[in-house]
Amino acid sequence: MENLNLFIRSIFIDNMIFAYFLGMCSFLAVSKNVKTAFGLGVAVSVVLMLALPITWCINSFILEPGALSWLGEQYASTDMSFLGLIMFIAVIAGLVQILEMVIEKYSPSLYNSLGIFLPLIAVNCAILGAVLFMQQRNFDNAWTATVYGAGSGIGWLLAITCIAAIRERLVTKAIPAPLRGVGITFIITGLMGIAFMSFLGIKL
Image 1 (cartoon, helix red, strand yellow):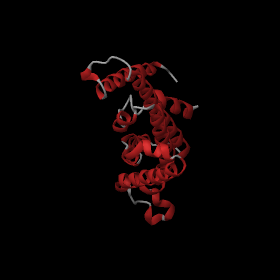
Image 2: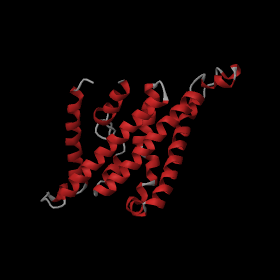
Image 3: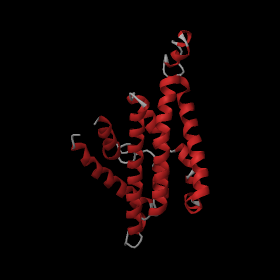
């Protein structure tokens, strides 16, 4: 039940876009087309689902103070936490590289439409942010970290797909010239963020 609660909260209440505004660069740049936005959202979700349990294991069994005690008593006081950011970024970059090769092989059209934003998933602050939130919240096990990663990914996917659908409709609308493009997107993102704040009143 706690994992279900965490999953729902990470989608709607602690949404990476609307609650923390993480991953805004690709959110704004790729959300002009629903198909492309959905593809990027799925890619980010997959990376989050894989990155969080892997980084949880690395943090719990290697980086935390005393985590290396399984190697012997002489390592019980070892603290490798200073390597946290480097290790987390390396894991994320490796997963993105593998995902990029898979997409290039099995979906060349999506690979071409995403362009530079596919390898830039490696520096998407929504992914690193989720990893750091996971570390801060000190989850009990890798499964809980996976649930949080899945919820965060689906929340990001939901956000970018919704904004892309709205932007596609806005192409035919009479929008004042100063607000066209990113301007109206910022306004809509703010309104969607306010709408998602309504989920704060739900007691799970």
